[in-house]
Image 1: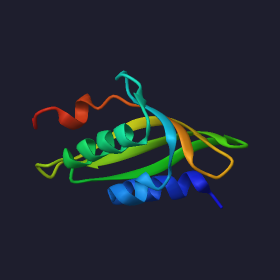
Image 2 (image 1 turned 135 degrees about the vertical axis):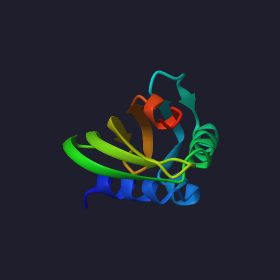
Image 3 (image 1 turned 120 degrees about the vertical axis):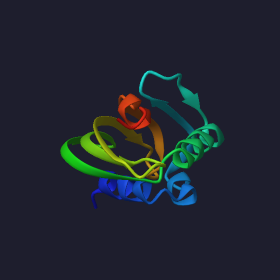
Length: 120
């Protein structure tokens, strides 16, 4: 099973409960150059806030490296903004999962400025 693809498929659905099911209680997450977020409740809240700021998103993988329970995924992610624009940006994600398959680390390296820039 391509667990990384399955995770991003759930993320693209923007269903917070499906995404939360992936997270270990001890998850640590970081978005771009933002602060580290510690613990499942805080990470779920952060994703919920982000999901409310966009209409949709879809990941198209470019490269992936997996070593055991660690993965690095490079993708182009197209975000649909609240004003119906599609904005594509490159994203690299570093993921680690526990022995029971829950993510305990999710670092997302992205520049979201183009997504939230005013329409030209």
